[in-house]
Image (cartoon, rainbow, N blue to C red; front, side):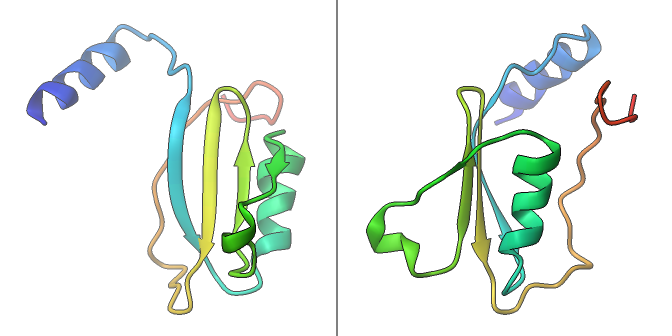
Length: 96
C-alpha cells in the first residue's frame, strides 16, 4: 500500500491531472437523492444512470461517465459532520 501512496504523491507533485475515478461509493442521508442529482448531474455534469433492478428499490443514486463513477447510497445513520474531504479546481464553477 505504501507504494501506491508514493505513486500518488509523485503524480500530485508533478501536477499530473487525475484522469478519472473508476468507482467511489459515498453515503447520503435518506431523501438526499434530489440534492445529489442537483450536484453531480446539475453542477458537475455527470449523467445519472439506472441501477440494476435488484438494487433500485434501496433509494441509492448512481452517476457515471467514461471518466468517473460515483455511487451514493442511502445511510439511515448518516452524519453530515463526517465528510470526505476533496480539494479541486474547477474553471467553470469559480473554484481555482
